[in-house]
Length: 231
Image 1 (tube, one colour):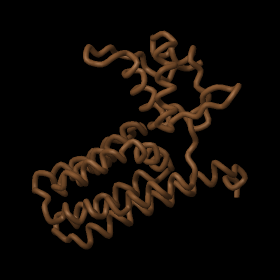
Image 2: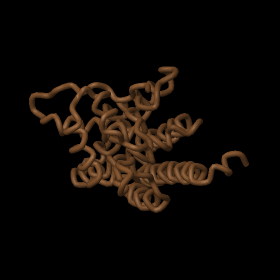
Image 3: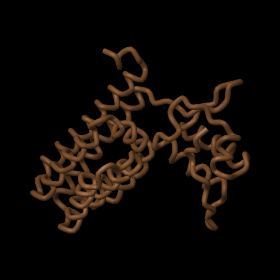
Image 4: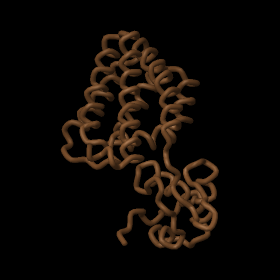
């Protein structure tokens, strides 16, 4: 069986169980461990080069954070994503992202605008980049907008929402053509920020999130009803 998880790298400041937990959570967020997939302790331990104990502890913690579900007499599985989950998260995200973009239009610096442009340039000109890189680049772009809002409480709230957003982000950006569309949507947001047009920046940011939500809904519908994929 092909290995997908990298061996863990020990960190003198973190206990092994925490490193294993973070590695598994990242694999779920990036879609390496897919919704509905059974988590086999022995296999995961072998892939990460650790014993079963920290893997078992990580699975228990992932269950507490709703990344994993335990099914009696069957074992641990990566939790699926429901349409209600998507709707709830994107409803919050749309409002917060719009607010952040609107504030950023009033407060963004030339240096931050240049950083956003560079992030877009990388995604357009680096040729074939894998999903993990695309997700990271997308995350970094949004983080720049949050930072430019100069509202520390808003930035913190969005940071707390990040892990839930990240899982949906990976699913959305994996859809063929979505990365290209997202880049163009980001470019329009940057232009509004550059023009210090708060109202337009807010509207574009909210529209961007709504589009991503629609992509997620369509993807989940197809996955939940395989017959639709052939229609």
